[in-house]
Length: 541
Image (cartoon, rainbow, N blue to C red):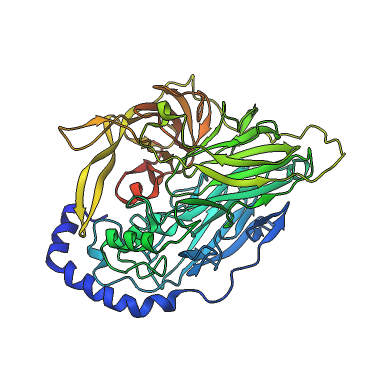
Protein backbone atom coordinates (compact mmCIF):
# COMPACT_ATOMS: atom_id res chain seq x y z
CA UNK A 1 0.00 0.00 0.00
CA UNK A 2 1.45 3.35 -1.03
CA UNK A 3 2.05 5.59 2.02
CA UNK A 4 -0.57 8.38 2.21
CA UNK A 5 2.05 11.15 2.30
CA UNK A 6 3.66 9.86 -0.88
CA UNK A 7 0.26 9.60 -2.57
CA UNK A 8 -0.62 13.15 -1.58
CA UNK A 9 2.66 14.50 -2.95
CA UNK A 10 2.10 12.77 -6.27
CA UNK A 11 -1.47 14.02 -6.44
CA UNK A 12 -0.38 17.65 -6.01
CA UNK A 13 1.97 17.31 -8.97
CA UNK A 14 -0.02 15.41 -11.56
CA UNK A 15 -3.41 14.32 -10.28
CA UNK A 16 -5.53 17.32 -11.18
CA UNK A 17 -5.12 17.30 -14.93
CA UNK A 18 -5.41 13.53 -15.15
CA UNK A 19 -8.62 13.48 -13.13
CA UNK A 20 -10.20 16.18 -15.31
CA UNK A 21 -9.38 14.12 -18.40
CA UNK A 22 -10.96 11.09 -16.71
CA UNK A 23 -14.20 13.00 -16.10
CA UNK A 24 -14.51 13.87 -19.79
CA UNK A 25 -13.78 10.32 -20.93
CA UNK A 26 -16.20 8.90 -18.36
CA UNK A 27 -19.18 10.64 -19.94
CA UNK A 28 -18.64 8.59 -23.08
CA UNK A 29 -17.84 5.31 -21.36
CA UNK A 30 -20.36 5.12 -18.51
CA UNK A 31 -23.48 4.28 -20.49
CA UNK A 32 -21.79 1.42 -22.32
CA UNK A 33 -20.88 -0.28 -19.03
CA UNK A 34 -24.47 -0.97 -17.89
CA UNK A 35 -25.61 -4.54 -18.48
CA UNK A 36 -28.54 -4.80 -20.87
CA UNK A 37 -29.25 -8.50 -20.41
CA UNK A 38 -31.58 -9.57 -17.57
CA UNK A 39 -30.10 -11.08 -14.39
CA UNK A 40 -30.33 -14.83 -13.77
CA UNK A 41 -33.74 -16.04 -12.66
CA UNK A 42 -34.14 -16.51 -8.92
CA UNK A 43 -35.63 -19.58 -7.24
CA UNK A 44 -38.73 -18.84 -5.17
CA UNK A 45 -38.97 -20.78 -1.91
CA UNK A 46 -41.57 -20.05 0.79
CA UNK A 47 -42.48 -16.94 -1.18
CA UNK A 48 -38.92 -15.58 -1.13
CA UNK A 49 -36.84 -15.18 -4.28
CA UNK A 50 -33.43 -16.67 -3.50
CA UNK A 51 -30.25 -16.31 -5.57
CA UNK A 52 -29.33 -19.11 -7.95
CA UNK A 53 -27.64 -22.03 -6.15
CA UNK A 54 -24.40 -23.75 -7.18
CA UNK A 55 -23.43 -26.85 -5.23
CA UNK A 56 -20.29 -28.93 -5.05
CA UNK A 57 -20.23 -32.37 -6.70
CA UNK A 58 -17.70 -35.04 -5.78
CA UNK A 59 -15.95 -32.69 -3.37
CA UNK A 60 -15.45 -29.87 -5.88
CA UNK A 61 -17.23 -26.72 -6.98
CA UNK A 62 -15.90 -24.77 -9.93
CA UNK A 63 -17.62 -21.47 -10.53
CA UNK A 64 -17.15 -18.19 -12.38
CA UNK A 65 -17.84 -14.72 -11.00
CA UNK A 66 -17.93 -12.25 -13.85
CA UNK A 67 -17.84 -8.64 -12.66
CA UNK A 68 -20.06 -6.24 -14.57
CA UNK A 69 -22.58 -3.45 -14.06
CA UNK A 70 -26.35 -3.67 -13.76
CA UNK A 71 -29.40 -1.74 -12.61
CA UNK A 72 -31.64 -2.90 -9.78
CA UNK A 73 -35.39 -2.47 -9.47
CA UNK A 74 -34.89 0.79 -7.56
CA UNK A 75 -33.00 2.47 -10.40
CA UNK A 76 -29.62 2.21 -8.70
CA UNK A 77 -26.72 1.13 -10.93
CA UNK A 78 -24.11 -1.01 -9.24
CA UNK A 79 -21.25 -3.42 -9.85
CA UNK A 80 -22.28 -7.05 -9.50
CA UNK A 81 -21.39 -10.70 -10.14
CA UNK A 82 -22.93 -12.57 -13.09
CA UNK A 83 -25.51 -9.81 -13.66
CA UNK A 84 -27.22 -10.65 -10.35
CA UNK A 85 -27.21 -8.97 -6.96
CA UNK A 86 -26.71 -10.91 -4.77
CA UNK A 87 -24.52 -13.30 -6.73
CA UNK A 88 -25.04 -17.07 -6.72
CA UNK A 89 -25.25 -18.94 -3.42
CA UNK A 90 -22.34 -21.40 -3.21
CA UNK A 91 -22.96 -24.63 -1.27
CA UNK A 92 -20.10 -26.90 -0.22
CA UNK A 93 -19.28 -29.46 2.47
CA UNK A 94 -16.32 -29.67 4.86
CA UNK A 95 -13.27 -30.98 3.00
CA UNK A 96 -14.43 -29.67 -0.40
CA UNK A 97 -12.41 -27.64 -2.86
CA UNK A 98 -13.87 -24.41 -4.23
CA UNK A 99 -12.36 -22.85 -7.35
CA UNK A 100 -13.59 -19.35 -8.24
CA UNK A 101 -12.61 -17.85 -11.58
CA UNK A 102 -12.96 -14.11 -11.07
CA UNK A 103 -13.24 -12.18 -14.34
CA UNK A 104 -13.17 -8.41 -14.05
CA UNK A 105 -15.05 -7.06 -17.06
CA UNK A 106 -15.39 -3.54 -15.71
CA UNK A 107 -14.08 -0.65 -17.80
CA UNK A 108 -10.71 1.04 -17.21
CA UNK A 109 -10.09 3.29 -14.25
CA UNK A 110 -10.08 7.04 -14.85
CA UNK A 111 -6.65 8.50 -15.65
CA UNK A 112 -5.02 9.66 -12.43
CA UNK A 113 -6.87 7.16 -10.26
CA UNK A 114 -3.59 5.70 -9.00
CA UNK A 115 -2.81 9.07 -7.41
CA UNK A 116 -5.87 9.09 -5.19
CA UNK A 117 -5.55 8.86 -1.42
CA UNK A 118 -9.23 8.63 -0.43
CA UNK A 119 -11.81 6.29 -1.97
CA UNK A 120 -10.18 4.96 -5.13
CA UNK A 121 -9.84 2.18 -7.73
CA UNK A 122 -13.64 1.80 -8.15
CA UNK A 123 -13.23 -0.83 -10.90
CA UNK A 124 -10.40 -2.77 -9.25
CA UNK A 125 -11.33 -5.66 -6.99
CA UNK A 126 -10.34 -8.69 -4.93
CA UNK A 127 -12.34 -11.46 -3.24
CA UNK A 128 -12.82 -12.47 0.40
CA UNK A 129 -14.47 -15.64 1.77
CA UNK A 130 -15.79 -14.07 4.95
CA UNK A 131 -15.52 -16.34 8.00
CA UNK A 132 -13.76 -19.26 6.31
CA UNK A 133 -10.79 -20.85 8.06
CA UNK A 134 -8.55 -21.37 5.05
CA UNK A 135 -5.01 -20.36 4.19
CA UNK A 136 -4.66 -16.58 3.83
CA UNK A 137 -2.64 -17.31 0.70
CA UNK A 138 -5.90 -18.72 -0.69
CA UNK A 139 -8.15 -16.07 0.86
CA UNK A 140 -5.92 -13.45 -0.74
CA UNK A 141 -7.52 -10.02 -0.45
CA UNK A 142 -4.27 -8.13 -1.07
CA UNK A 143 -3.63 -9.16 -4.69
CA UNK A 144 -5.76 -6.81 -6.76
CA UNK A 145 -7.62 -7.75 -9.93
CA UNK A 146 -7.67 -4.66 -12.20
CA UNK A 147 -10.15 -4.07 -15.04
CA UNK A 148 -9.77 -6.65 -17.79
CA UNK A 149 -7.81 -9.07 -15.59
CA UNK A 150 -8.60 -12.59 -14.37
CA UNK A 151 -7.68 -14.45 -11.20
CA UNK A 152 -8.47 -17.97 -9.99
CA UNK A 153 -9.01 -18.40 -6.26
CA UNK A 154 -8.53 -22.03 -5.14
CA UNK A 155 -9.87 -22.69 -1.64
CA UNK A 156 -9.26 -25.97 0.21
CA UNK A 157 -11.78 -26.24 3.02
CA UNK A 158 -10.50 -28.38 5.91
CA UNK A 159 -12.45 -31.53 6.71
CA UNK A 160 -12.86 -30.24 10.26
CA UNK A 161 -14.32 -26.90 9.14
CA UNK A 162 -17.55 -26.01 10.96
CA UNK A 163 -20.76 -26.15 8.95
CA UNK A 164 -22.58 -22.87 8.83
CA UNK A 165 -23.48 -19.60 7.12
CA UNK A 166 -20.69 -17.55 5.58
CA UNK A 167 -20.48 -15.17 2.63
CA UNK A 168 -18.16 -13.87 -0.07
CA UNK A 169 -17.68 -10.28 -1.16
CA UNK A 170 -15.41 -7.79 -2.88
CA UNK A 171 -12.51 -6.65 -0.71
CA UNK A 172 -10.11 -4.28 -2.50
CA UNK A 173 -9.12 -1.50 -0.14
CA UNK A 174 -10.39 1.82 -1.44
CA UNK A 175 -13.32 0.39 -3.40
CA UNK A 176 -15.00 -2.25 -1.22
CA UNK A 177 -17.68 0.16 0.02
CA UNK A 178 -18.70 0.90 -3.58
CA UNK A 179 -18.58 -2.69 -4.77
CA UNK A 180 -20.26 -4.50 -1.88
CA UNK A 181 -23.64 -3.06 -2.86
CA UNK A 182 -23.88 -5.84 -5.47
CA UNK A 183 -20.64 -7.86 -5.44
CA UNK A 184 -21.50 -10.43 -2.77
CA UNK A 185 -23.21 -13.75 -2.19
CA UNK A 186 -23.99 -16.47 0.33
CA UNK A 187 -21.39 -19.13 1.07
CA UNK A 188 -22.93 -22.12 2.87
CA UNK A 189 -21.02 -25.03 4.42
CA UNK A 190 -23.61 -27.79 4.72
CA UNK A 191 -24.18 -29.82 7.87
CA UNK A 192 -23.41 -33.52 7.51
CA UNK A 193 -27.03 -34.29 8.45
CA UNK A 194 -28.56 -31.24 6.76
CA UNK A 195 -31.50 -33.25 5.39
CA UNK A 196 -32.66 -33.90 8.97
CA UNK A 197 -32.62 -30.19 9.83
CA UNK A 198 -35.39 -27.71 9.05
CA UNK A 199 -35.42 -26.37 5.47
CA UNK A 200 -33.39 -23.21 5.21
CA UNK A 201 -34.06 -19.86 3.57
CA UNK A 202 -31.10 -17.69 2.59
CA UNK A 203 -31.78 -14.04 3.47
CA UNK A 204 -29.04 -11.71 2.21
CA UNK A 205 -29.58 -8.25 3.69
CA UNK A 206 -28.06 -5.48 1.57
CA UNK A 207 -28.10 -1.74 2.15
CA UNK A 208 -28.67 1.11 -0.31
CA UNK A 209 -27.96 4.70 0.68
CA UNK A 210 -27.80 7.55 -1.82
CA UNK A 211 -28.81 10.45 0.40
CA UNK A 212 -27.18 10.29 3.84
CA UNK A 213 -23.64 11.00 4.98
CA UNK A 214 -20.49 11.11 2.90
CA UNK A 215 -18.26 8.05 2.44
CA UNK A 216 -21.21 5.79 3.34
CA UNK A 217 -23.36 7.53 0.72
CA UNK A 218 -23.16 5.62 -2.58
CA UNK A 219 -23.66 8.77 -4.69
CA UNK A 220 -21.08 10.79 -2.74
CA UNK A 221 -18.57 7.95 -2.64
CA UNK A 222 -18.96 7.19 -6.35
CA UNK A 223 -18.15 10.76 -7.32
CA UNK A 224 -15.34 11.09 -4.78
CA UNK A 225 -13.69 7.89 -6.05
CA UNK A 226 -13.75 9.11 -9.66
CA UNK A 227 -16.14 6.32 -10.64
CA UNK A 228 -17.32 6.19 -14.24
CA UNK A 229 -20.51 4.41 -13.18
CA UNK A 230 -23.33 6.84 -12.45
CA UNK A 231 -25.24 5.40 -9.47
CA UNK A 232 -28.41 7.24 -10.59
CA UNK A 233 -29.30 9.30 -13.63
CA UNK A 234 -29.01 12.47 -11.53
CA UNK A 235 -25.48 11.69 -10.36
CA UNK A 236 -22.80 13.99 -11.77
CA UNK A 237 -19.48 12.31 -12.45
CA UNK A 238 -16.24 13.70 -11.09
CA UNK A 239 -14.44 14.22 -7.82
CA UNK A 240 -16.97 16.45 -6.02
CA UNK A 241 -18.87 14.12 -3.74
CA UNK A 242 -20.96 16.88 -2.17
CA UNK A 243 -22.31 17.99 -5.56
CA UNK A 244 -23.18 14.41 -6.50
CA UNK A 245 -25.02 13.75 -3.23
CA UNK A 246 -27.01 17.00 -3.43
CA UNK A 247 -27.97 16.40 -7.08
CA UNK A 248 -29.26 12.92 -6.30
CA UNK A 249 -31.16 14.05 -3.22
CA UNK A 250 -32.83 16.89 -5.13
CA UNK A 251 -33.95 14.52 -7.90
CA UNK A 252 -35.72 12.00 -5.68
CA UNK A 253 -39.50 12.35 -5.59
CA UNK A 254 -40.59 9.60 -3.25
CA UNK A 255 -39.82 6.26 -1.58
CA UNK A 256 -37.81 4.17 -1.44
CA UNK A 257 -34.95 6.38 -2.57
CA UNK A 258 -35.70 9.28 -0.26
CA UNK A 259 -33.92 7.43 2.53
CA UNK A 260 -31.52 4.60 3.16
CA UNK A 261 -33.12 1.17 2.98
CA UNK A 262 -32.33 -2.54 3.19
CA UNK A 263 -33.30 -5.13 0.62
CA UNK A 264 -33.66 -8.88 1.18
CA UNK A 265 -32.18 -10.89 -1.69
CA UNK A 266 -32.49 -7.72 -3.78
CA UNK A 267 -36.19 -7.17 -3.00
CA UNK A 268 -37.75 -4.48 -0.86
CA UNK A 269 -39.64 -5.98 2.12
CA UNK A 270 -40.57 -9.33 0.51
CA UNK A 271 -43.03 -11.71 2.13
CA UNK A 272 -42.00 -15.03 3.65
CA UNK A 273 -44.84 -17.58 3.45
CA UNK A 274 -44.23 -20.67 5.59
CA UNK A 275 -46.95 -22.95 6.85
CA UNK A 276 -48.16 -22.29 10.37
CA UNK A 277 -45.86 -23.86 12.99
CA UNK A 278 -43.45 -25.01 10.26
CA UNK A 279 -39.84 -24.74 11.38
CA UNK A 280 -37.55 -22.93 8.96
CA UNK A 281 -33.89 -22.05 9.30
CA UNK A 282 -33.38 -18.39 8.46
CA UNK A 283 -29.80 -17.87 7.28
CA UNK A 284 -29.48 -14.14 7.94
CA UNK A 285 -26.45 -12.51 6.31
CA UNK A 286 -25.86 -8.85 7.15
CA UNK A 287 -24.19 -7.82 3.89
CA UNK A 288 -24.88 -4.12 4.41
CA UNK A 289 -22.03 -1.67 4.20
CA UNK A 290 -22.64 0.58 7.19
CA UNK A 291 -25.65 0.37 9.54
CA UNK A 292 -26.00 -1.93 12.54
CA UNK A 293 -29.21 -3.97 12.62
CA UNK A 294 -31.18 -4.41 15.85
CA UNK A 295 -33.72 -7.00 14.78
CA UNK A 296 -37.08 -7.76 16.37
CA UNK A 297 -40.49 -9.05 15.37
CA UNK A 298 -43.19 -6.40 15.67
CA UNK A 299 -45.40 -9.05 17.29
CA UNK A 300 -43.32 -11.04 19.79
CA UNK A 301 -46.01 -13.74 19.97
CA UNK A 302 -46.03 -14.40 16.21
CA UNK A 303 -43.05 -16.79 16.05
CA UNK A 304 -41.11 -19.12 18.27
CA UNK A 305 -37.41 -18.54 17.61
CA UNK A 306 -34.13 -20.26 18.39
CA UNK A 307 -30.79 -18.63 17.53
CA UNK A 308 -28.78 -21.76 16.70
CA UNK A 309 -25.61 -20.22 15.24
CA UNK A 310 -23.69 -16.96 14.95
CA UNK A 311 -21.06 -16.16 12.33
CA UNK A 312 -21.16 -19.71 10.98
CA UNK A 313 -20.47 -21.49 14.28
CA UNK A 314 -23.38 -23.48 15.72
CA UNK A 315 -23.99 -22.86 19.40
CA UNK A 316 -23.77 -25.62 22.00
CA UNK A 317 -27.23 -24.50 23.18
CA UNK A 318 -29.66 -22.31 21.23
CA UNK A 319 -30.75 -18.88 22.44
CA UNK A 320 -34.49 -18.85 23.04
CA UNK A 321 -36.77 -15.85 23.04
CA UNK A 322 -34.73 -13.66 20.74
CA UNK A 323 -36.02 -11.14 18.16
CA UNK A 324 -38.07 -9.33 20.80
CA UNK A 325 -38.04 -5.79 22.16
CA UNK A 326 -36.32 -6.98 25.33
CA UNK A 327 -33.91 -9.30 23.53
CA UNK A 328 -33.28 -8.10 19.96
CA UNK A 329 -30.85 -9.79 17.59
CA UNK A 330 -27.94 -7.37 17.11
CA UNK A 331 -26.04 -7.77 13.84
CA UNK A 332 -22.95 -5.80 12.85
CA UNK A 333 -22.25 -5.37 9.14
CA UNK A 334 -20.65 -8.64 8.03
CA UNK A 335 -22.11 -10.83 10.78
CA UNK A 336 -24.52 -13.73 10.33
CA UNK A 337 -27.19 -15.43 12.39
CA UNK A 338 -28.94 -18.75 11.89
CA UNK A 339 -32.43 -18.56 13.41
CA UNK A 340 -34.92 -21.39 13.64
CA UNK A 341 -38.40 -19.90 13.45
CA UNK A 342 -41.91 -21.37 13.60
CA UNK A 343 -44.62 -18.76 13.06
CA UNK A 344 -48.35 -18.89 13.75
CA UNK A 345 -49.49 -15.41 12.66
CA UNK A 346 -48.32 -12.48 10.55
CA UNK A 347 -45.41 -10.32 11.66
CA UNK A 348 -42.77 -7.96 10.34
CA UNK A 349 -39.06 -8.45 10.94
CA UNK A 350 -37.74 -4.97 11.53
CA UNK A 351 -34.75 -3.09 12.90
CA UNK A 352 -35.13 -0.34 15.45
CA UNK A 353 -32.66 2.50 15.88
CA UNK A 354 -33.34 3.45 19.50
CA UNK A 355 -32.84 1.69 22.81
CA UNK A 356 -29.23 0.49 22.75
CA UNK A 357 -27.39 3.81 22.91
CA UNK A 358 -25.76 2.87 26.22
CA UNK A 359 -24.05 0.00 24.38
CA UNK A 360 -23.71 1.12 20.74
CA UNK A 361 -23.12 4.81 21.46
CA UNK A 362 -25.17 7.88 20.65
CA UNK A 363 -23.63 8.38 17.20
CA UNK A 364 -23.80 4.90 15.67
CA UNK A 365 -25.77 4.38 12.47
CA UNK A 366 -28.52 1.92 13.42
CA UNK A 367 -31.13 1.15 10.78
CA UNK A 368 -34.78 1.84 11.54
CA UNK A 369 -37.39 0.14 9.37
CA UNK A 370 -38.97 -3.08 8.17
CA UNK A 371 -37.04 -5.74 6.27
CA UNK A 372 -39.27 -8.80 5.88
CA UNK A 373 -42.99 -9.58 6.07
CA UNK A 374 -44.07 -12.97 7.40
CA UNK A 375 -47.49 -14.40 6.49
CA UNK A 376 -47.93 -18.03 7.56
CA UNK A 377 -50.35 -20.14 5.54
CA UNK A 378 -53.06 -21.91 7.57
CA UNK A 379 -52.11 -25.44 8.60
CA UNK A 380 -53.39 -27.93 11.16
CA UNK A 381 -50.20 -30.01 11.05
CA UNK A 382 -48.41 -30.43 14.36
CA UNK A 383 -44.67 -30.03 13.88
CA UNK A 384 -42.22 -32.03 16.02
CA UNK A 385 -39.37 -30.26 17.81
CA UNK A 386 -36.64 -29.39 15.29
CA UNK A 387 -33.30 -31.18 15.08
CA UNK A 388 -30.52 -28.81 16.10
CA UNK A 389 -27.24 -28.51 14.17
CA UNK A 390 -24.17 -30.09 15.76
CA UNK A 391 -22.15 -27.59 17.80
CA UNK A 392 -19.05 -26.21 16.11
CA UNK A 393 -16.00 -28.42 16.82
CA UNK A 394 -13.97 -25.84 18.76
CA UNK A 395 -12.34 -25.99 22.18
CA UNK A 396 -12.75 -23.15 24.65
CA UNK A 397 -9.74 -20.91 25.25
CA UNK A 398 -11.13 -19.25 28.37
CA UNK A 399 -8.89 -21.30 30.67
CA UNK A 400 -5.89 -21.24 28.30
CA UNK A 401 -3.18 -18.72 29.20
CA UNK A 402 -2.36 -16.64 26.10
CA UNK A 403 1.09 -16.80 24.55
CA UNK A 404 0.96 -13.11 23.61
CA UNK A 405 -1.18 -10.19 24.72
CA UNK A 406 -1.80 -6.99 22.78
CA UNK A 407 -4.07 -3.95 22.80
CA UNK A 408 -5.34 -2.61 19.48
CA UNK A 409 -7.18 0.69 19.13
CA UNK A 410 -9.77 1.77 16.61
CA UNK A 411 -8.63 5.30 15.71
CA UNK A 412 -11.10 7.93 14.54
CA UNK A 413 -9.29 11.23 14.13
CA UNK A 414 -10.09 14.65 12.73
CA UNK A 415 -11.02 15.76 9.22
CA UNK A 416 -8.54 15.48 6.38
CA UNK A 417 -8.77 16.64 2.75
CA UNK A 418 -8.05 13.98 0.13
CA UNK A 419 -8.56 14.46 -3.60
CA UNK A 420 -10.56 17.60 -2.90
CA UNK A 421 -13.04 15.87 -0.57
CA UNK A 422 -13.22 15.97 3.22
CA UNK A 423 -12.79 12.62 4.98
CA UNK A 424 -12.35 11.46 8.56
CA UNK A 425 -8.90 10.14 9.40
CA UNK A 426 -9.14 6.46 10.40
CA UNK A 427 -6.68 3.86 11.67
CA UNK A 428 -6.42 0.57 13.57
CA UNK A 429 -3.13 -0.04 15.36
CA UNK A 430 -1.39 -2.07 18.05
CA UNK A 431 -0.90 0.45 20.85
CA UNK A 432 0.41 -1.84 23.59
CA UNK A 433 1.84 -5.32 24.05
CA UNK A 434 3.11 -7.85 21.52
CA UNK A 435 1.13 -7.94 18.27
CA UNK A 436 3.14 -10.83 16.82
CA UNK A 437 0.99 -13.73 15.58
CA UNK A 438 2.48 -17.20 15.09
CA UNK A 439 0.89 -20.49 14.07
CA UNK A 440 -0.09 -22.62 17.07
CA UNK A 441 -0.05 -19.79 19.58
CA UNK A 442 -3.00 -18.41 21.54
CA UNK A 443 -3.37 -14.64 21.19
CA UNK A 444 -5.29 -12.31 23.47
CA UNK A 445 -6.31 -8.99 21.93
CA UNK A 446 -8.15 -6.17 23.62
CA UNK A 447 -9.94 -4.04 21.04
CA UNK A 448 -10.36 -0.46 22.25
CA UNK A 449 -13.00 1.96 20.93
CA UNK A 450 -12.94 4.77 23.47
CA UNK A 451 -12.02 8.11 21.87
CA UNK A 452 -12.50 10.14 18.71
CA UNK A 453 -11.31 13.46 17.35
CA UNK A 454 -7.96 15.06 16.50
CA UNK A 455 -5.00 14.71 18.87
CA UNK A 456 -5.31 17.12 21.78
CA UNK A 457 -9.08 17.50 21.36
CA UNK A 458 -10.38 13.98 21.76
CA UNK A 459 -13.78 13.17 23.21
CA UNK A 460 -15.43 9.93 24.43
CA UNK A 461 -16.30 7.76 21.43
CA UNK A 462 -19.94 7.76 20.28
CA UNK A 463 -19.71 5.43 17.26
CA UNK A 464 -19.28 1.67 17.29
CA UNK A 465 -16.70 0.18 14.93
CA UNK A 466 -17.46 -3.50 14.15
CA UNK A 467 -14.41 -5.72 14.58
CA UNK A 468 -13.73 -8.44 11.98
CA UNK A 469 -10.81 -10.88 11.94
CA UNK A 470 -9.78 -12.86 8.87
CA UNK A 471 -8.55 -16.50 8.93
CA UNK A 472 -9.50 -17.40 12.52
CA UNK A 473 -12.62 -17.01 14.65
CA UNK A 474 -12.12 -15.58 18.14
CA UNK A 475 -13.71 -16.25 21.53
CA UNK A 476 -15.16 -13.50 23.71
CA UNK A 477 -13.29 -13.25 27.03
CA UNK A 478 -14.61 -10.02 28.55
CA UNK A 479 -16.02 -6.61 27.74
CA UNK A 480 -16.13 -3.22 29.42
CA UNK A 481 -19.95 -3.38 29.34
CA UNK A 482 -22.84 -4.67 27.28
CA UNK A 483 -22.34 -8.42 27.58
CA UNK A 484 -25.48 -10.22 26.47
CA UNK A 485 -26.42 -7.59 23.89
CA UNK A 486 -24.53 -8.87 20.85
CA UNK A 487 -22.46 -11.66 22.45
CA UNK A 488 -21.52 -13.15 25.79
CA UNK A 489 -18.39 -14.59 27.36
CA UNK A 490 -17.45 -17.83 25.62
CA UNK A 491 -19.16 -17.06 22.30
CA UNK A 492 -17.22 -17.65 19.07
CA UNK A 493 -17.50 -14.91 16.46
CA UNK A 494 -15.69 -13.31 13.54
CA UNK A 495 -17.54 -9.95 13.40
CA UNK A 496 -18.95 -8.05 16.38
CA UNK A 497 -20.10 -4.60 17.44
CA UNK A 498 -17.93 -2.91 20.06
CA UNK A 499 -19.19 -1.37 23.31
CA UNK A 500 -19.03 2.39 22.84
CA UNK A 501 -17.14 3.94 24.46
CA UNK A 502 -15.43 0.81 25.70
CA UNK A 503 -13.48 -2.30 24.83
CA UNK A 504 -13.73 -6.05 24.36
CA UNK A 505 -11.11 -8.75 24.96
CA UNK A 506 -10.95 -11.82 22.71
CA UNK A 507 -8.71 -14.86 22.33
CA UNK A 508 -7.95 -16.89 19.23
CA UNK A 509 -5.59 -19.65 18.28
CA UNK A 510 -3.64 -19.01 15.10
CA UNK A 511 -4.40 -22.50 13.87
CA UNK A 512 -3.06 -24.33 10.84
CA UNK A 513 -2.17 -21.49 8.45
CA UNK A 514 0.57 -18.90 8.14
CA UNK A 515 0.50 -15.97 5.76
CA UNK A 516 -0.73 -12.37 5.35
CA UNK A 517 -3.96 -11.73 7.25
CA UNK A 518 -6.09 -8.78 8.27
CA UNK A 519 -8.23 -7.32 11.04
CA UNK A 520 -10.42 -4.29 10.37
CA UNK A 521 -13.53 -2.29 11.05
CA UNK A 522 -16.36 -3.82 9.03
CA UNK A 523 -17.96 -0.55 8.11
CA UNK A 524 -16.63 -0.80 4.58
CA UNK A 525 -15.86 2.88 3.99
CA UNK A 526 -13.87 3.01 7.25
CA UNK A 527 -11.75 0.04 6.17
CA UNK A 528 -11.30 1.64 2.75
CA UNK A 529 -9.88 4.67 4.56
CA UNK A 530 -7.31 2.70 6.61
CA UNK A 531 -9.23 1.47 9.67
CA UNK A 532 -7.48 -1.87 9.17
CA UNK A 533 -4.60 -3.79 10.69
CA UNK A 534 -2.66 -5.95 8.21
CA UNK A 535 -0.48 -8.54 9.94
CA UNK A 536 1.45 -11.67 9.08
CA UNK A 537 0.81 -15.03 10.73
CA UNK A 538 4.32 -16.41 11.14
CA UNK A 539 5.11 -20.13 10.66
CA UNK A 540 5.29 -22.28 13.78
CA UNK A 541 8.71 -22.54 15.41
